[in-house]
Image 1 (cartoon, rainbow, N blue to C red):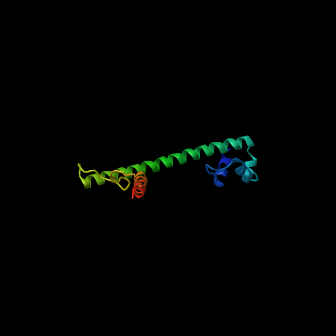
Image 2 (cartoon, rainbow, N blue to C red):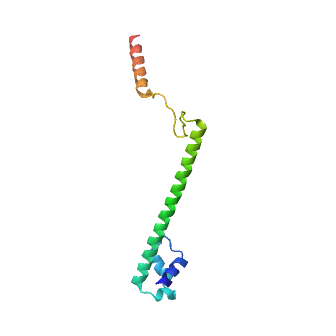
Amino acid sequence: MDGYRALLIERGVRVTSQWRKVHEQCADDPRAEACDRVDQLEVFQALATELEKEAAAAKEREREVRLRTERKHREARSRVQGPGSRVQGPGSRVQGPRFRAQGLGSRVQGSNQGLGSRI
């Protein structure tokens, strides 16, 4: 079964690989012929699970590095700005009151019509 596992790794099995396609590609290899089909499937599933765990761990490491870098940048900005000032990033805008122009337009038109009918 170790030979079949080595074969799968040589053929470049990934997390997204499908058993049917991998089995067809490896069918003519003597290492695959020496192993029962059920055992081949078990080896494939174990390898896919292992690759999935490795991918998840790599993704988590990347996330931790990104968070650490972001935290360092925030701390550096706060040291430059001083302890009492608030640092605003590109996504935080100060917004004033919002006005609704939709209702205002209909009232103006209605009042003009009323004046026109009086004259």
